[in-house]
Amino acid sequence: MAVAQFTNAPCWGVAGKERERRTFVNLSRELPLNGSEVTQTGGHSLVKKRRVSIFGGVSRRCQSISDQQALDFELHTDPYNEDISTSTDGSALHDESTQHSTDSQNLQTELIMLSLPAIAGQAIEPLAQLMETAYIGRLGPLELASAGVSMSIFNIVSKVFNIPLLSVATSFVAEDVARSAGNNSAPFQISQCTGGQYQNGAYERRELPSVSTALLLALAIGVFEALALYFGSGLFLDMMGISSGSSMRIPAEHFLKLRAFGAPAVVVYLAVQGIFRGFKDTKTPILSLGLGNFSAVFFFPLLMYYFHLGVTGAAISTVLSQYIVAFLMIWHLNKRTVLSLPNAHNLHFGGYLKSGGFLLGRTMAAVMTITLSTSMAARQGALAMAAHQICLQVWLSVSLLVDAQAAAGQAMIASSYAKGDYSTVKKIAFFALKTGLITGVSLALLLGLSFNSLATLFTKDAQVLQIVGSGLLFVSASQPINALAYIFDGLHYGVSDFSYAAWSMMAVGALSSVFLLYAPSIVGLSGVWSGLTLFMGLRTLAGYARLSSKEGPWKFLHGDAYKLQVAI
Image (cartoon, rainbow, N blue to C red):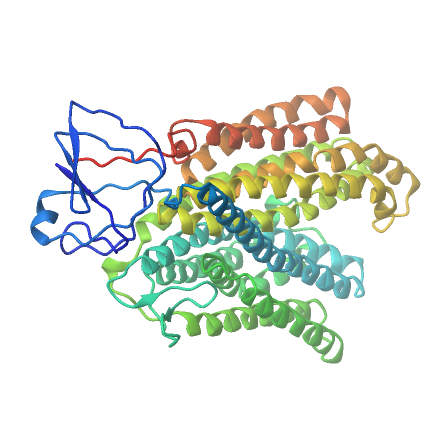
């Protein structure tokens, strides 16, 4: 048998389980199931002989159920939690519509407020690298070339291993926070941007297993990266084409070995950044990143020029600023959660390693495709390569704006999805896609009007600028496609659909790589840009296909969203 009880009171399900607020949807029909019937007695509705009862025009709360009833009955409620007023004069629909509109506006405001600081955070790191490049450039072309190669190696290794951890930490922490907030056995709830607080306002920190796991993994990965970069510096430089006889070899290897000491700090603060995103807090990382990178403004001239350390001083300055960022982030995180070594059985290494492994494969597929495009552009000659590099840098840089929106959507979806609030997940997903498309169209128009002028900031060569002008369509027109691709990635991560994100990226990368291998030999540099546009277009189609599928984590989008089952 199954039971549904209706008055304006809280409801308890099976004895000993946590209290839940149950609400029922408005449907004016009954779905017979195996000839069962519904009876009502004194405010109780009992479903006998396997009938699913759908109540129309009623919104009542569950009344307490005795322990004996709880042993005999089990209550299953709809995850969409829609409240319908009992008023019959038409005001119910108006009130519901008003509440729905208010909830949607609140979600939209939250997504925007999370996105704006994230956009600023995405911009700080590239600006810091530009500042480092500018200081090194004053030392001479040899120093700039040597440091440039080493920075490229460091950035590639960092992206391949660190970005997966950041993305997985965001989803896992958001889910952990949602589960903690849903535990009503204690008067404690996790609040947005604080990590936790009592309902009466008293502040309290809690230990979250997902946070401890992320930090331990970050430390281990950071040490591994540092050792690999330090002892494998020669191998990495060989792979980049810097032979042992090159004049760049010694300064580049020395610079890379020094930068290797900063790898643990970078991995840790990226993991902490993902943790804060899981808290739906994108402001605190901005403060830490800003202060840490601002310190480099002081270190660069002091160590490079005052102490005459040159490129060595630049590397030391960057490493010091990275550890300052890591220290500040951990200091802020310690205010939100209890940072201690947890019990081994509480750690989520299995989930992190599995999901992180999927995203590692995904990231490598994306990096290899972009690298192949650069290699094919280089075969078109020096002028074509210079033009391609300008277009590619602008193309990748503006994508950071949408990537920040995707990260905000990921955190919000992970939180709601963990609580089974699929109605909210649907609203967030559709609004994220809408704002992403608007951002993409806006970027396309902006770049279409300003790209030719923007290109003059990178070069004054007339021939290069002419080739860059032919890439205008690639850079600007592809922005809406790029925006949707990044947003779809955020949606997949939000529901922890990391396996699909990985396998689809590998398939998309393989198809795009085949195109990139042959098209440039036929149509030149346009073939490279067409291949990159195809790459992003296929990513968008893969994302749309997943949301359109009736299988997988998004299947709730295609079910009967207003079906209430009261099952045995």
